[in-house]
Image 1 (cartoon, rainbow over the protein chains, first blue to last red):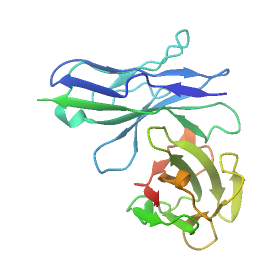
Image 2: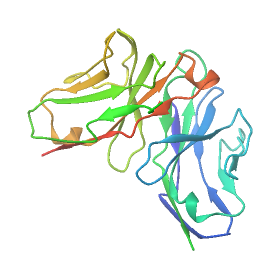
Image 3: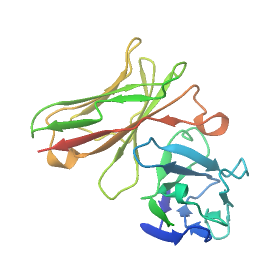
Length: 111
Length: 117
């Protein structure tokens, strides 16, 4: 079975501070990992995926297969980063359209 | 492109009534996915549909829930004889092709919040 764990329900940092949102997963094969973000009153949108290996809005995430983690990091948080962040996983193979989400972390960046 | 449109945004039903949730995918998208988010939980996959076909309904409860995506019109998630436990946010996503993960992303709607009283 595939599972995604986001241990922090809430995370609060000050503007300019580094931020790390944790994500651990369980999957027996080779998963694909994603971070989705939901800003206040807006729809869920893809932030980044591990296969792209790119930085979006200053955020990066590295897939660590040994630790089964996909933590989201940003060196200097901005107030506009305040949002709900969801880590998600899809398996390989024919059902890769099916996403498994974590419970989410609400990030608040204080001025 | 207006994005994935879901309506209504909020729906209140009494126990035993029917709930109909609508999802209009993005223009050019023929693949639709429904997810449910119970309070304090992550989104959970319910069903995957293409035009006029149910591809995977492994996440749908066995009773009272059904989904369709007709040739014309929006996708509909129908919940019959609603109970308090059906209260949740229901999200729809769409993609232009089947290999949503590798080739493109799934775009989400803003969701419908169903409250059963």
